[in-house]
Length: 128
Image (tube, rainbow, N blue to C red; front, side, top):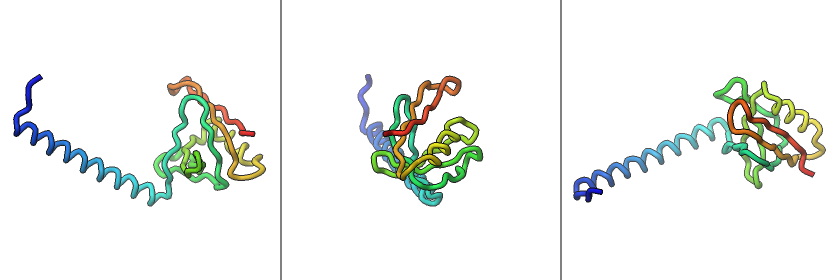
C-alpha cells in the first residue's frame, strides 16, 4: 500500500469534511420533511417477532405512496409510524385488531417470515 503524501492526506481530509457536511445537511432536510408531514421515525418490521403497541389514532394516507396507510405505534415507549399497504392482508388484520381492542395503547405482535417480495408473510397477534 502506497504511503499518502501531505497533499493526498489534505485531499482526503477535505473529502471527508465535505461528506460529513453533506450528511448533516441531508439529515436536517429529512428531519424537516418528517416534521412538516407529522411523521415519526419509521418502524421497520424485521424478520421474526416484532412487539409494539397501536396508538388510538386513525391511520392516514402516506404522502408519497397512494396505496399505503400510516399507523401510529409505540415501540418501547417511542412513537413511530408504520406504513402498510391497503391491498395487503396485514392492513385488514390491523383494522380488525384495532376495532376489537378493549383499550389503547393496544399491545400487538407482528411475526414476519420471509425476506423477499414473494415469500414475505405477516401475522398479527394480540399480546396478552
